[in-house]
Amino acid sequence: MAKILIVDDEKAINDLIALNLKMVGHEYVQLYSGEQIPELLNKMRIDLVILDVMLPGRDGFDLVGSFVKRGIPVIFLTARNAVSDKVHGLEIGAEDYIVKPFEAVELIARIHVVLRRNQKNTSEFSLDGTTVDLDKHIVTVNGQVVEMTNKEFQLLEFLIQNKNIALSREKIIEQTWGFDFYGETRTVDVHIQRLRKKLNWEHRIKTVYKYGYRLEV
Image (cartoon, rainbow, N blue to C red; front, side):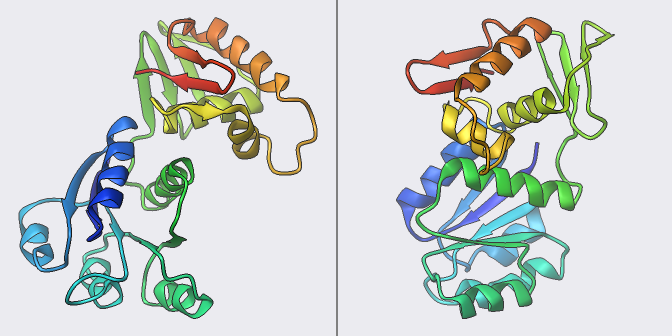
């Protein structure tokens, strides 16, 4: 998975982001100001940066150039919600601009979009004899190709991208079926049962009581 740099001076938020990155399998580095960024970039590879705007000393708008010139994608994560700030952040090179407070599921999803856009995320996921090629949309179990509908694959991809995170049925519907879906949440249960059976993941896709599901890795 990717190595992601978090730059945010609010320790609670920095730690929350780190926790969610760890849960879905990414490596991370935590900084609380921009002072150590030049030294860090000379020492290690960074695939993506989550950058606050309001930092002690130089703010995120001043710092973004040091990443962009190295080809490192940046996502601003900040409390500054003015449209002018968003436009400015994107114009100076950020890939995305997310306003606090944020939902962990949305942050992870947008991180994966940026990583895919920059081709810095693994396209293959393997677990218990099941291999999922996220680019080619091919699923194999013990070497045998498993046929899946588009919706089943979209649901599987969403579970993989948010592994170890409890996902509500409503969030699954929103991200997999779309905001305009008017069916019942039982649709999620039916598709989950199909995935469990096809992938032999009865013990991997856990039911979160009265809430939703979690792919446990």
